[in-house]
Amino acid sequence: MNENLFASFITPTILGLPAAVLITLLPPLLIPTSKYLINNRLITTQQWLIQLTSKQMMTMHNTKGRSWSLMLMSLIIFIATTNLLGLLPHSFTPTTQLSMNLAMAIPLWAGAVTTGFRSKTKNALAHLLPQGTPTPLIPMLVIIETISLLIQPMALAVRLTANITAGHLLMHLIGSATLAMSTTNLPSTLIIFTVLILLTVLEIAVALIQAYVFTLLVSLYLHENT
Image (cartoon, rainbow, N blue to C red; front, top):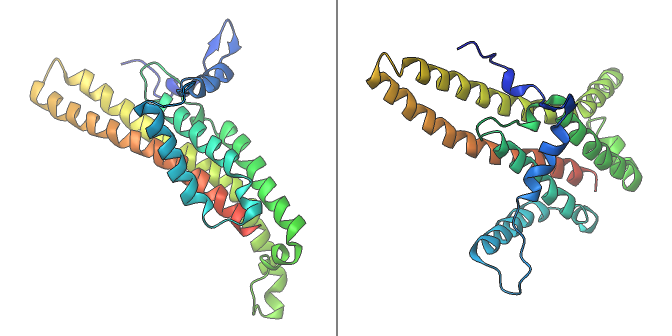
């Protein structure tokens, strides 16, 4: 196959204009909503999952931290739907773009850190210097802790980008091998196709888990600063 291995990660365009914004807005529009007093099974299951996830994330937070619950639930739904979008044929996964993941991670991290410096200034500054540090090591440890604080949003974005990109590349390679061997060795093709199906199931789980991990880490950063 002459297709570029990274062709699926190129931002699609419509009439020369980037279509990433339209693609990003599509998954949330597909989430079903109910206009009736009694919900159907799909809406009921969806609400139960949202309530269960919200309860797990918000249990450790105080009143100020729980005010972020709507934002965090919207974040996990958005990331999960965009991750699953990339598993459809001839689709585009916005979360494989590091720039987009940084655009999500930096404002949320900055908001959590700013909240901590405003409400608990002494505790926020105390995190930059571990208790019992010898005096000669204080300047070095302050620099190290500051760097580790500033690198948190980059770690969030890179983790999400790397996991989603690696899974898509592996599926692309195995799918190409299945197609190439389909005319030469049928037993091997069936084995590789079975592996591809199992990998697809794994990627669905990874898409949901990475959305949960990203949101959970943002929630932990918020918990440290409230």
